[in-house]
Image (tube, rainbow, N blue to C red; front, side, top):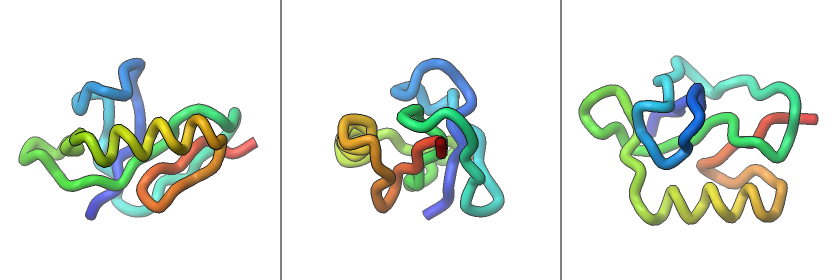
Length: 74
């Protein structure tokens, strides 16, 4: 699955992500969404289904990266 950098203000809107050519580099500050790995919705945007949205919440609550969600580093 491809990686998408979070480039907008609404993590639940697929148009607020940019397709990345590799694993994105995440900078300051941590505890903010950096990138997700998800299936493509056909428009070079991530398919934001319940499993990835739940994993995003889990990563933010635990303040730790998960398999498909990267947070910005401190």
